[in-house]
Length: 87
Ligand SMILES: [Zn+2]
Image (cartoon, rainbow, N blue to C red; front, side, top):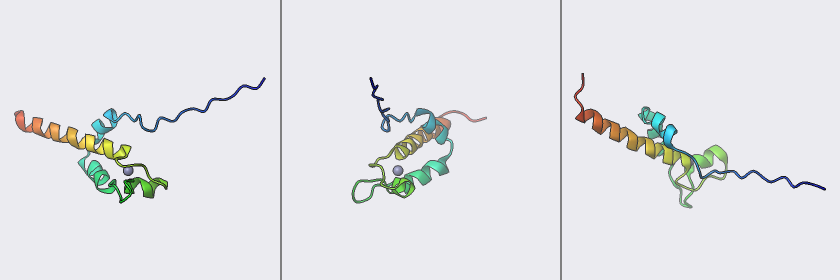
């Protein structure tokens, strides 16, 4: 009686961007570089991921999504900082 091993499903799409984007929001030069590098090519694949891991992820890739999330968080914090009275 041979038991069949079930392949573990890789959940590449279910990336939680929350904590990563939160940390990255404080590092504008990091997400700026990511947004500049991870752009779609003519086939709708990510150029930044293609050079890193061969075939390339479909754009927007997870890194681009994290980076754009970080940019949004950064902008929100910037707006809040302007609103609040500094020391
Ligand atoms: Zn990418």
